[in-house]
Image 1 (cartoon, rainbow, N blue to C red):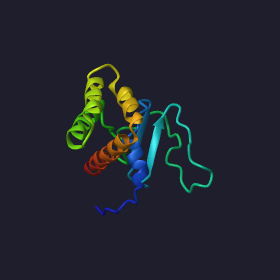
Image 2 (cartoon, rainbow, N blue to C red):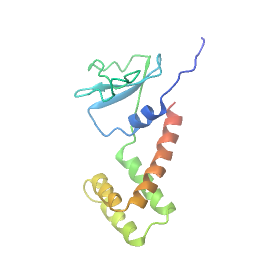
Image 3 (cartoon, helix red, strand yellow):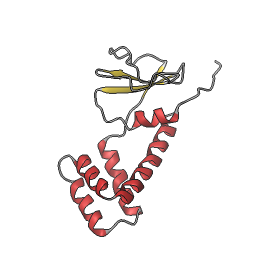
Length: 144
């Protein structure tokens, strides 16, 4: 069987792997190479000038057995917390901030509390998002 290379939109894959909406499911169309989205409430967010539309709603009925689709499995909260712990160990983070982050990681709804703490410190937030992007890229490489 002949194989052909697909031209992938890396930014779209990164967005799919960082999806926070449980009602939306991203998949890679293995025929076209486009990242597509299915689910209720999906709204087209591209401008009219765009050449393609990877987020237009597709049939709500999931076709998970379709061999032309590779569904994206986003990192769960536990994986993200492991990344955050590694980040805190590797980066030079103020001890007080490190203690605050460690405290909210064990409480209820740690993700939103962590985001709030990171938003108070732009330098730390930027470092975290770069660190997380590296892990997302590695995850995508493995997935592909």
